Each structure stands twice: as C-alpha cells, then as structure tokens.
Length: 364
Image 1 (cartoon, one colour):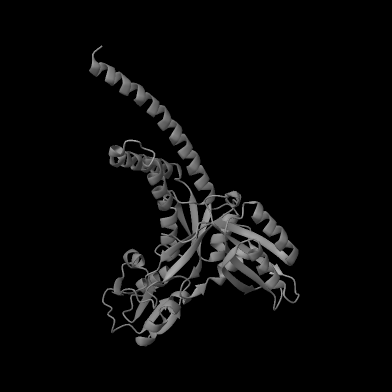
Image 2: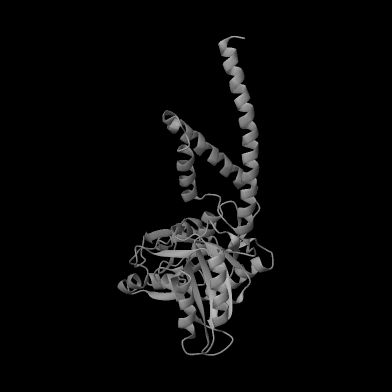
C-alpha cells in the first residue's frame, strides 16, 4: 500500500466516525425539536448560535483552520435547523385576528413551521389551546406606546396556560386605501383601538374621523370590501398586499420605536424548571387587605436578590375595588433561592401564580 492509499484509508476511518457522530448529533437535534414543539420555542436562536460558533471555533489548536471550521460548523447548524423544521410540521398556533394582522405576522416569525389558525378574539385563541384545538397561542401583551393589553393579562390571571416565550415585534402602521383613494380623499380611518391610539397625532393632523375594528387586518378587509375612497385602514404593509390595498402613507405611528411584545402560551409548564436558558419570570399575585401588604411582598423579591422589570395592577373581575398584580422579575426561579422566595411570598399573598419563564428582549 502506497502513501496515498494509506492516507485515503485514514480519511475513510475518520469519515466512518464522523457519520456515526452525525447520526448521534441529529438524534439529539430531534429531541431538541420535540422540546421546542412542546414549549412553543422557535427553531432559530440567533444569540445561542453566535455563542456556539465562537465556543466551538475556539477549541481548534490549528488557528489556520478557524475560517474553514467556522464554515463547517455553521453548515452543520443549518442542517440541524432544517431537520428540526421538518419535524415541527403539523404544529398549530392560534392567534386573534385574520391573515395580515400583527399577531399573524408575529406567529409566523416565532413559529414559521406551524399552521396558523385565526380566531375572532383573544379569549377564543387562548381557549383553543386550553381545549387542545391548537398547540400554542401567540397573543400581544404590551405595546411600547399604548401600554398593556389588559384583556390578555386578565386571561393570564384567570386561565391555566403558561408563557413559554416573549418576543418583540417592531410595529410599522400604514395608512391603506382602495385603488383610487388619495391622502386628500380620506375622511375616515378604521382600525383596532390600540392602533388608532398609536397613530393619534397623525389622525388629529389630518382631521380624520375614527372607526374601531376588532383587528387591524379586519379593518383592512373592511376597507377593501367597501371600496370607498373616503375610508382608509391603519394596518400593516402585509395586510395591504393580502387585501389588494394601496399604501397611502408609511410609518404613521407616533413613536418610531413602536414595538409590541407577544407571548407564546402553552399547556406545558415544564419549561419553568429550566434553570439555564431563561432569566426572567412572570408572577401574578393578590395580597392581603392589610396596610403595607404590597410593600411587604415587593420587599421579599428584593430580599432574595430579585429585580422587578415590570409591575402593574389590574382590577379583579370577581370583587369590586380589589386588584391583582402582574410582575416580570429578573433572575432564575428554578433554584434554591427561587423556591425560598416563593415560600416567603406565599405567606404574604392570598394567591400566587408563576405564569412562565422567558429570555428577555428577543426581537423578531
């Protein structure tokens, strides 16, 4: 056997080992896909990919090979993602509205392989997961300009689902009209109340009469159906394409940083046990009707080293002038300190729920 034959044999032996390792890695990738399917997590995680690429490239002893190994590793990650996408086909995700709504757009970005199922209200979309019609629901929980979506917060408080992810979608509101409409012909504008609120200054400047709709995409469909050059919708550019409307004006929302946070709701709560990937959790609670009870509850979080990102109160629907509190807290809850904090909170609260855990500030 000459030198070339020896080298080829050695490469074949390495390739055999690599084939076995590839199968093993793809098997674990399938388990990852199953976990993501159970918890409504997207296949793509850009931040984790960056960490993995840097971490694995640094393991090389021969630095001249870094650029080649980086390409090799990135390609392997792409193959793994492609496999996971295939395995996730058939998942159903509920959202409120119709095609072209920001909820539909968000659901498509978070779970691109899922079948999107529209529902007429937040409540219907939420209950579709409760009763098993859908695997997940993607619902808005807060807008940077208009504030919280109270109806969804109430569902979180009284419902049985868990939040497995929170994602930020930049919202660009557009003024949409029928084919022959112009900015000058528009007298009325129709949209969801929050969209109208986000574009309030624009509406005032153009002296437009407002009409409310259940959803921005529904508003676009109504404008298309009426075919009236005096009425426009405030909705996404995607809705314009879907319903055959003309974009009369772009980015009419008052805040250039207009962002809506969407939560993924799931029946599965196992993600709450994850101690590594998530660094923020959501608590809801009621306190005893005693002086200083709320301050005592908040102090417990600080005592255990936790920082509140958000705290809001909402009226209880069961009793007049009684309130529950919604908080988003930085820190890992699936640990000894988290358990101790919850035990202390239970002593101060009439009701306490851990709604979910998520990685904060994930943009889609």
